[in-house]
Amino acid sequence: MTWYLEAMALAFWLVIGLGVLIVLVVGVLDRLQKSDAIRRNYPVIGRFRGLFTTLGEFFRQYFFAMDREELPFNRAQRDWVKHAAEGGSNTLAFGSSRNISVVGTPLFTPDPFPPLDDQFAKSEPMEIGPHARIPFMARSFFNISGMSYGAISQPAVRALSRGAREAGMWMNTGEGGLSPYHLEGGADIVFQIGTAKYGVRDADGNLDDEKLRAIAEKPELKMFELKLAQGAKPGKGGILPAAKITPEIAEIRGISAGQDSLSPNRHKEIRNFADLLDMVGHIRDVTGKPVGIKTVMGGLEPFRELFDLINERGAETAPDFITLDGGEGGTGASPMPLMDLVGMSIREALPLLTDLRNRAGLKDRIRIVASGKLVNPGDVAWALAAGADFVTSARGFMFSLGCIQALKCNKNTCPTGITTHDPRFQAGLVVEDKDKRVAMYGKSIVKEVETIAHSVGVSEPRLLRRRHVRLVQPDGTSIPMNELFPTDRAPQTVS
Image (cartoon, rainbow, N blue to C red; front, side):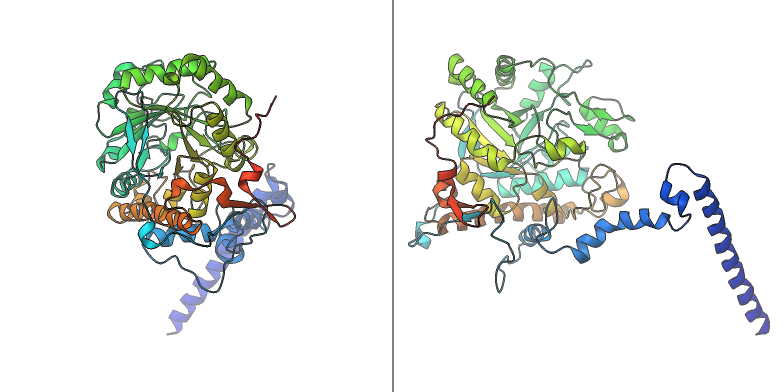
C-alpha cells in the first residue's frame, strides 16, 4: 500500500511540474511574440481573453440574451420555426413577449365580423410566365429561397427537396448549379443563374446554351432566375471557400477543386437594362420556361427605367418575375460592410417596387417575389399585404432543418450538418426526419398566414391589403400602411 501512495504522490508532482513547465513555456512564447499586445503584456492570462470572446456568443445565446434580443434572429423566432417544424402547438399562455412599441412593428387590424369557418378559402395557384412556351402554375405563396449545393450540404439539399414536394412549394437551387439531390424529391425547381453561371457555363465562363437547354428539359425545372444581386452582398459575387468545394461540387459547377470559388460581381455581358431584357428573352427562348431576375433595391430610378423600357419594347419582353431581396438578407459568406450597409430593407423597398410595377401597368405581367428575413407568419402576411405575390425564405428553412444560428456557415464546421461537407457533422442531419420538418414548417406558415387573413376579414391571404396593417411610429402610435405607402401617390424622383 505504501508503494501505491508513493507512486500516486510522484505522479501528482509530475503533473504539477509538467503544468508549471507548460505555463512557463507558454509565458515565454507570449512574451516573445509580437502580433498580440495583450498576450505580450499579460503572458498566459491574456490568452483567456480570446477564449472568452469565442465562447461569449454561445453564452449570450443560451444564458443571457432575452427571447427577443438576439440578431439576426432571436430565440422567439427560432423557437416558432422549431415548434412549427415539429408539428407541435404554437399557442402560448399569459401574453406576448413582443415589444409592440418598436418602430416599424406591423400590427394587423382585426375585423369586427370576420368570415365564418365555411367562408374560408385556400390561396389559388398563380401563373408565372404567360409568354413562355411552358408557363408555371405555382401552387404555394411561400417557397424555398436560393441555397446552393456547396453552401449547404448534400443531406440538407435532399431534405429540402423532399419537404418541398410534400408541401407543394418550389425550391430554388441557388447559384451553385443543379445537383441530383435537388431532383431527388420531385419538387418544383427554380434554377438560379448567378454571375459565374455555374452548371450552364462553358470553359470561359460564358452561358452555354446546350447545357441550359439540357437542364430545361428536366420536368422538375419550372423556372429560371437570373441573379443580379442578393441582399447580403449587393455588388459582390458568390463566395464559396475552397474547404467546401468537393470534387462532386466542382464537377456540378464546372470549376476546379481546391481553390476558392469567387463569382464575378455582375454578368459581364449585361451592361444595362437593354442587355438585361435581351438576356432574359434569350434564356426564355432557349428553355421555353419563365425567366425572372433577383436583385436588391437602392432607389426608385433604376426600376422606373426598367419598367419604361419594358413598356417601350412590349410587355412580352419583361422578366416574368422579380425576386426582391432586402439588405437584411442572409448568405454563407459576405464582407461585413456589404452585409451591414448596402441595400434597402425589404420593409421599405417592397411597397415601392410593387407601386412602380403597378403604375407601369405590369401588375398581371410581372410577379413580385419578396425575400429577406421573412421567416414567421407575420413577416409573410406583411409582405403579401405590401404587394408581394410570393414570399421565399432560406434561413427559415435552415431553422426547420435544425440550424442553431452557430454562425459557422462559412467555415465548414456547422455543428448541425447543414452548411458543412464534413461527414462527421453531416451524420447528425437525418434526411428521413428533416424532410418532414421542412414540409411541416412550410405548411404551418401557410396555415398561420391564412389565420391572420381571416382575422382581418378576408377569405384568403392574397386578399390582404395595406389597409389591413398598421405600422408603429417613433411616438408609439401606429399608422395604416396604406397611408404611409399610398398606392395612388405621385411618382417620386430619386437621383
